[in-house]
Image 1 (cartoon, rainbow, N blue to C red):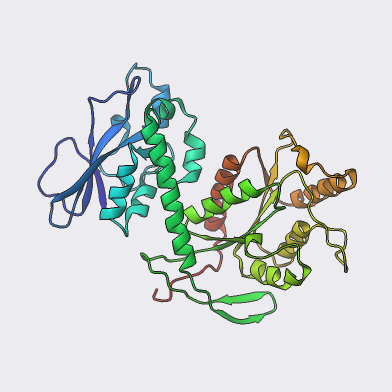
Image 2: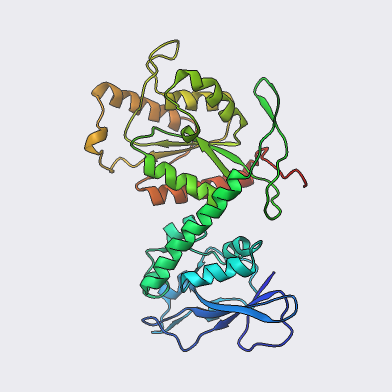
Length: 355
């Protein structure tokens, strides 16, 4: 699918998305709007809508009018990290999904869409130009929120269609077989284990889980089982073993401690961490910033506070960690770290049965 920028439409566009700059539209000095048209394989324009594209350089332009068009290339394979986009209303996303059901996710990704990419949203939403132009109207922000929900649901449906088949397990090695998904071609998907305390981190876990689904990978964690039930430990072990990456989120609680056995006195979260280390899983750790206040409901005893500090020291030994202040920032950090880790150290992953 081609995405091109054109001042004047020609008659030979086929299976192409064409962006035409709306020079007459001005948002407090920012000109970011494009008319978007889709031409099918017969060369017919079957739908049109509008979107806005922002570039970081606009906020540093010396002129009074900040025009994005001069920064945009004539053919768009993938917008770089300086750019983001948003549909002017929810109809933009609905039409894109209606007419290009197998490609709309890829197109939104190529355009760094703020509904599709939660990491971009957390980065760009406070920029002056984004506030003044892309989010100028309630319709745009409402459309983004509704589109984000729609995209999340689509990815959940994709997740639910996945069927795993277990093979023989030998020591710490787990063989993964192919699976089928009623969707577009997907080459490799990764399983990511999310470990943390629960009651104090419900929203951060949800944000991270949603972000991983937006990446089209598979988050797993305590939502699948009762981590506080020692009888479930064998299941938790198997899930960690079959995961490609281990994401650890530490808040202001040490968490529920194991009461019996050789692990008595340590938290279930720490036990999961120690097992991930034993299995040599790539560990991505995120610790809440020291300046974030502890909610009254989650204040723990002095003894548990000491255990939490020792746990943090253990986690930070021989590995880099990131400090987070809010759930959105955390989700963005997790996405960036996973992308980097997947490039540096690809996991086994899952592939389609027909690939």
